[in-house]
Length: 71
Image (cartoon, rainbow, N blue to C red; front, top):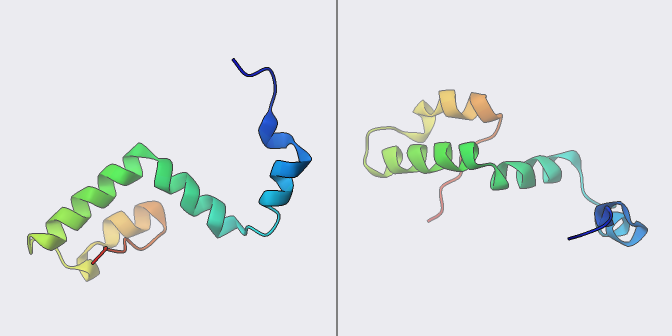
């Protein structure tokens, strides 16, 4: 088990010195299970033709980001 907070070390801080707030927000959402579930749901509905990207505004506004589909 780890004794300390390695993420507070100066070497870790240096690795992230050039990151902007959107970078951290994106990383947080990428790991968030609720966001991932919403993304899959919207992507599936778009792929099935039950929703268009323009109609995904509820999901987009919930997370503050645009769901970008992989091609």
